[in-house]
Amino acid sequence: MDYQTLLNFVPIPNLLELKKVLFIGPHPDDIEYGCGGLVSELVGLGAKVRFLIVTDGGSGSFEFGNIEKIKEIRKEESTQAAKYLGIEKVDILDFPDGGIYSIDEMAKKIAKRILEFYPDTVFCPDPLLETKNPSWPFKYCKSYSKSFIDF
Image (spheres, rainbow, N blue to C red):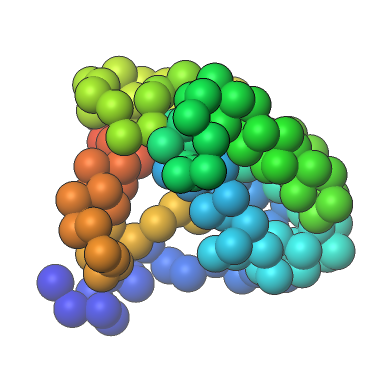
């Protein structure tokens, strides 16, 4: 499908008119690094913005030996960053970072959060994004898209 045909089915939202926005990220700090500027602008325009972080962030550092401590630190960092950006709520799901879990179960939990907040638009990673680890975007993004299609 070409880009123009896709836009006929899914038009790009007018960012100036958004009232409720949900950002979904695979790990703590992904949203802040990838979209912090946009988040700040949307909050400045009066939008209610929430973060949904899908994994616990336990594999996000090589500096600490204690996974529980890493998860705690990353959760606190995300909470502080969100507070600084003026985010209404940060929700971190309990899926283990780098662990084994069901894509269907992840999709259900994501869909539940979308339905609870009912945002005007949702921002999430591009499943075709090239990374050093080519499997992670597909796994997470498959569950994001599944939450829209199946539930």
